[in-house]
Amino acid sequence: MKRTLVITGGAGFIGSHVVRLFVNKYPDYHIINLDKLTYAGNLENLRDIEGMPNYEFVKMDICDFEAFLDLMQKKQVDGIIHLAAESHVDRSIKDPFTFARTNVMGTLSLLQAAKLYWESLPEKYEGKRFYHISTDEVYGALEMTHPEGITPPFTTAASSGSHHEAYGEAFFLETTKYNPHSPYSASKASSDHFVRAFHDTYGMPTIVTNCSNNYGPYQFPEKLIPLFINNIRLRKPLPVYGKGENVRDWLYVEDHARAIDCIFHKGKVAETYNIGGFNEWKNIDIIKVVIKTVDRLLGRTEGEDMNLITYVTDRAGHDMRYAIDSRKLQRELGWEPSLQFEEGIERTVRWYLDHQDWMERITSGEYEKYYESMYANR
Ligand code: NAD
Ligand code: DAU
Image (tube, rainbow, N blue to C red):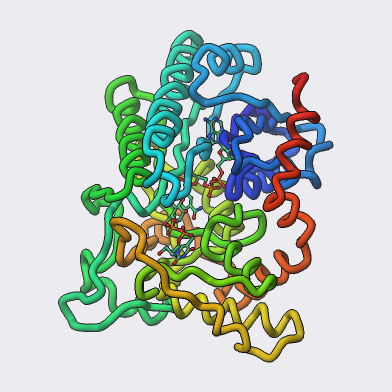
């Protein structure tokens, strides 16, 4: 079946994995990667597929309503997978306006353009889909204890799966009330509400998914795992916020991309699906695993870089614990994570160590100049 899809934010971390998966898996689809190329967008992430006949890159700001409407009409777009966003919590604390602009107004702009175009067609919303990628952070923060007194984190599906039926709100469910704390999560929550409102008000076929922390290749090195891998390699301090006891639920990025593929094709309109791998870690524990892995792969004595751990002032409003219950997705659509964490983290560390040139181009700012000259005339 032929389709024309726009994937927004395809030059970013998760978006690049989604674009790669769709371009390779669906030769009959025309995949348009729409990205503004902010500091976080890097077309080098897609070097391996940029020459594919079913792939096109369009440099565009999602807030540019007229340009996006024009693109929808000219390319006859019938599906949107929306990942473009400002994504880093620490930046949102310093500059909340940029997050409201991109995440809220940008999403609204896409929705309104899609509505105008799709409603102008004879078949209207038939065969159309607006799929919005969101985060578990919109649900707020979970406690570190729960009614049965068992203490998270749970690091395997088995350890959590056998108990969490009884825990109720010890995990984020699709029905958990939104309670965002950071400007980033507040902006994502707002965009989620707009997406659902477009279904409820206009009948747009929307889907929202909320995923836990992703890790893997091509993540911008302001996020915990790539930042720390690089700092360990260079023997620079590792700034651990607060006591390092906050818990995050980690999913390998390619498993998220597979979930997005599955949900885009099989998910029910107007539904929400949580995506996660039942893989909770305290920050300090995952940091120790990363240190040992980097040390081993660099031929250093395992653990010799533990002294780089440096406790620093906590992030303002730092959410204590995130943990996703993704059983609905597993039960209804048959998705499950493919990778054990041990394998995922080994693969990830290896990738960053093998791609020091990629890292250095980003950290030196060289890549920005490259893209300016490369795409100035498009
Ligand atoms: P990222 O910061 O790596 O990439 C964001 C991409 O969006 C970049 O390519 C950037 O250039 C582009 N972009 C930003 N503003 C834009 C604009 N105004 N117009 C067009 N493009 C713009 O982000 P990521 O970590 O890959 O996250 C992608 C999406 O997934 C986001 O919506 C995020 O909220 C969500 N999410 C991320 C995680 C995670 O762990 N990283 C987890 C759950 C959900
Ligand atoms: O839960 C999903 C979210 O995960 C996504 O929606 C966000 O886009 C993504 O950035 C991520 O948010 P986090 O704030 O959890 O990720 P980050 O990598 O910034 O931080 C992970 C944890 O590590 C968090 O508890 C803060 C801590 N941390 C982070 C950095 C960058 C440190 O202790 N030191 C650091 O230098």
